[in-house]
Image (cartoon, helix red, strand yellow):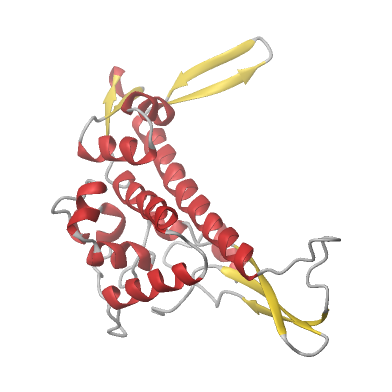
Length: 254
């Protein structure tokens, strides 16, 4: 287990002026390991941010994000492997403090950081949502409980709209649109898709803001760094992966 694995690939373009001065950089990312959000193997953790935020959450954080007395053990996305602590003994609280300082340096204001953490908690609660079968198992309903109500509020939508998005799908046909109800198994898959989409969009937004603050562009002609004469490209890729159940993602990585 590698506690420091970034769980995504990246290419960093570091740019220099003709005099050798560092002028800026840009980051391209790919293959974010979103499958980890849903399943972790024995001894593995989910993404560090979940553990860091829950361990560091203040009373105000817990009130704002509906966490109450919820702990790591209460969330399905992080309790399935039974592993909560880092093997290298690094403190999640200390790492969260360092991350917050780094985000401030990278141009994230308090409002932006709160919105990012709001989505992190929404992802956690999404993993706790449950569905009840109806119509002899052919359809289902999203259970109106603490998890679903928290997700709806954190995402800024009504419970009804959240439920409709997870328990139905719209087929766009030439003759018109048809709404098809989903069974519980399909609804759980839809919720997994929601989890991956939210986390992926949040991740992409963070990378976008960082790029805006480390990237220098000539405002007159749109070229990167007017004096740029050289660059160093750093490619950070995954190592080899093999799990009990391997997917297309492992094929691409390996």
